[in-house]
Structures are given as C-alpha cells and as structure tokens.
Image 1: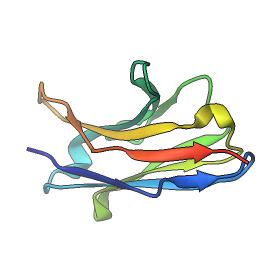
Image 2 (image 1 turned 180 degrees about the vertical axis):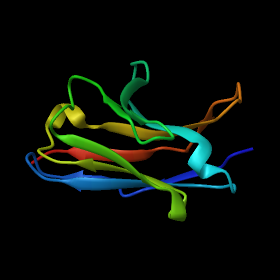
Image 3 (image 1 turned 120 degrees about the vertical axis):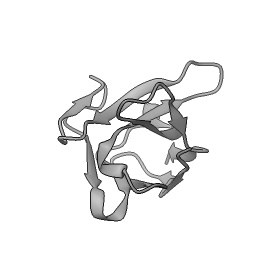
Length: 117
C-alpha cells in the first residue's frame, strides 16, 4: 500500500507559478514510477507529466516548456513546477504512483489549482 499526499495548490494569476509536491509512503520510492494528472469537472483525468525511476520525463503537449516534473528520492517526494500558468490549467491535480513490478496504481487525494485574475 502506498499513500500519497499532495500539497502546494492554490489560486494564482495568469502567468504566475506554483510548485506542487507529493510525498509518498514506503521505503522503495526510488522504484516508483510517478506522475501528475489533472481533472476538471465533467471530464476525464488526463496525464500532465510522468517521471521514471531513471528520471526520464514525459509531458502532455499542453504543458511542454512550462511545467517540469522532478523527484527527490531522499525525500520520497515528486514535484511539479508550473510556470506561465494559464486559466485552462485550472483543475484538481492528482499524484500517481506505480511501484516497479506492481499491477496496482495509487492516487493522492488531489490538490486544487485555480488560475484566475
């Protein structure tokens, strides 16, 4: 069982920045495939960014060049640095984890990001 706790969401003006954090439980974090997803009301959850055990990253086209995913294995934490935020980035952001060799996917409770003037 992996528990994920997100933090760092909030209200920001267009063009601003936020950094989301996701703290994971367990002592095998370095072997977790991690990612960030987001969801708006009435829509499916969509991929934002992922990072492998080897820190290879992947991004949705809509956030490339603006968002950066990173991980700190010593702190069991994955980050999402979001710059040049747009109103269309408004969503609940969820942290995702899948341990190596596991068929299970784990999700955090979500953190709200609102981009508005």
